[in-house]
Each structure stands twice: as structure tokens, then as C-alpha cells.
Amino acid sequence: MTARRASQVAWALTAWANHAFATTVLVGFFPIFFDKYWAKDLPGTTSTFYLGLSNSSASFVVMLLAPWLGALADRRGQKKLWLGVFTAIGVLATATLALIGAGEWPWALAVFAVASIGFFGGSSFQDALIVNVAEPAETNRVSAFGFALGYLGGGLIFLFNVAMVLKPAWFGLADATVATKLAFIDVALWWALFTLPLFWRVKEAAPVTEPTGWRELWNTLKQVLRDKPVLHFLLAYWLYIDAIGTLQQMAVDFGAKLGFSTSALIQALLLVQFVSFPCAIAFGRIGDRIGTKRAIYLGLAVFVLVTMWAYTMQTERQFYIMAAIVGTVQGGVQALSRSYFSRLIPRERAGEYFGFYNMLGKFAAVLGPLVVGAVAIATGNQRLSILVLGVFFIAGAWLLSRVREPAAA
Image (cartoon, rainbow, N blue to C red; front, side, top):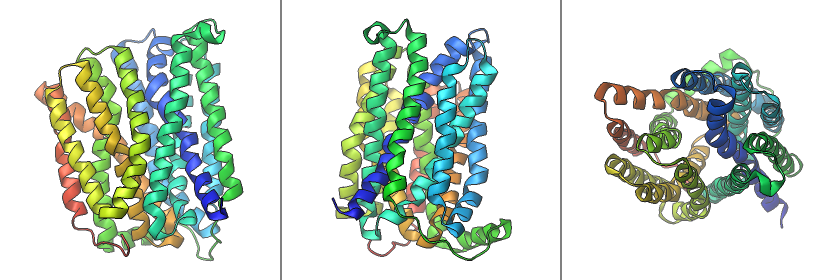
């Protein structure tokens, strides 16, 4: 394996590493364990409110920090350093969840928020480092490979942890509570272990002499506002990643409201992970063959059809099929978006620009579920709240059409 290829694999392994947190903790076990163990004495509506507040608070903190820390990392050649800092924060906080006792929901929420900040904050520097390992012509393939490994790694550790929680006796454990706490620890170890190769294999860009401060960040923001391709792409990305993130966050709740069993919902989550693995790689090749923008349009068209289908969905079998379809395009759209953006921006300022990129992603995490909830309350129709996401996909595709193609896209 060449040194260049080794650096690309090491970079992609960071997704294999941190997706363990996304699947097992963020989407899978924490919301369930919080409700049944840490906050079991709280009314259901209250625990849901506090959990949502914790999620939004973590996203808001990262949204504020990402651009400034990205600029700092660019100027000082410290993207790897800050990835390491946020990874350490996330790993330690995730492991600490195993030490929190029953009924201690304030501590659980606080530690979970810190772990989420570690995950989301580190992802920004992980994205920015793609310019250190891939030339513009390689970004589709390398970005897709990263997302593919993320879904595979996250799916494998989630599958293991689900088996451990459902059948604790097979693993010599007393009960599901002990198994869940052990799952938090194995996620922390997995996350730390598979992030290490990046620090050995990926070379950091040289620091620059420009000063870093809020004034320079404001100047960059003004530059972004003047750069129409970058601005239109960021607005397009904000709309459609908002809808994708909301579908991811609300799918389990939507299925539960339709009366689907917990086992069916978990199995659907696993299905998405394993379908996304090969399809993300395939989308990278599709992007090279037909053009990155056209491939993103294809993925967004599928998402529009998914929202229309969700409006009429009735059975668990249909939910499985929908999960599989989402898996075919979810990783591909995310991977190609990262790749496309990396070719629009100054490579020497990738940390700063990806800070804005991830800031919009975090803002979407705050806004998207709010829109869905508001539509559900206003109309009294849970299905309509999912259907309205189709408007976000269509509007995002229209804005994307206004972006000038970068060279060799």
C-alpha cells in the first residue's frame, strides 16, 4: 500500500471509529436507556423535553465554535490536534456514562451533551482533513469510502451491542442494564482505537502566518457571502441536509407512533447501516461517471419519493423497505456533498470553510425537528409532517442547480 493510500485509509477509519457513537449511543441506546433507567421517575413528556434540549444545546455549542476553531486550526496547522481534542472529550464522556447510576438524569444529560460535542466537533476537522489526503479528482471516491466505512463500522459495533443487550447471558452478564453500560465502554474504546492511525499516517498542512481572530473570521464570512457558488451550495446543503438529518432523527419516533415494535425499529436502523456501506462506495463511482451534482440530484429525488411513500406507509414490512431505500442514497448524498464542497473552497482554508459547512449542519439539527413538530401540532397529522420534508429536498436541489461547476467535478 502506498503512503498516499495509507493516509486515505487512516482518514476513513476515523469515520469507522466515531460512527460507533452515532449508532449505539446517539441514535440507539441513550434515548431508550435515558427514559427507562436514568429518568424513569420523570413524566414521559418531561424526559423527552430534556433530551431534546440536551441534543439542541450540544449542536448549538458546536455551531458557534466550529468556524472559529476551524480558522485557528488552518492558521496553525492544527486540524489533527483539534480532532484529537474533540475525540478525547467524546471518548471520555462516553465511557463516563457507564458510571452514572439510576435516577441521576441531570448527570446523564450533561455527560451525554459533552460526548455529543466531542462527536460533532471532531467531525468538522475530520471533514476538513480530506484536502490533506485527496486531490480534487479523488475526492468523490475518498469521501464515499469514508462514509462507507463509517456505516459499516457503526453497524457492526451496533449489531454486537444489540446482541449483548438482548441476550446478556450469552456474554456472561447479569442483565440488560449491565450490558448497556458495557456498550458505552466498548464504544469509547472502539472510537479511540480506530482514530489513532490518522495521527500516524495523515500529514498536517503547514501553518500560515496570518492572524486568527474574530475579525478575520468575519472577513471570511463576508467572502463566503460574496462567493456565489459557495454561498448557493451552503444554502442548498443546509436545506437538504436538514431534511436528511430530520428523517434520521425522527424515523424511530415516526415508526413508534404508527405502532411498530421496538425490535422492528432497531432492525430497520441496522438495515440502513449495512445497506449504506456498499451504496456509499457505489455513489462515489456514480459521481465520477455522471458528475457529482447529477449524482446528488439522483439521491435527492429518491428522498422526495421516500417522503411521499412515508405519507402512505402502513406496515412494518413497508418500513423495512423504506429503510433499505434510504440506505441506498443517504451515505452517497452526504459523501458527494463533502467532496463537492471541498472543490469549491480554498484548500489552505479547509478547516475554516468546513467550520461553516458543519455549522449549517448543526443549525439544521436544531431547526429540522422543530419544523416537523410544528407541522404535526398545527395540522394534527404526523404523516404530513414527514411529507413536508420533500419541499426541503426540492428547494435544496434548485439552489444546487445555481452552483457553478468546479473544475474536474
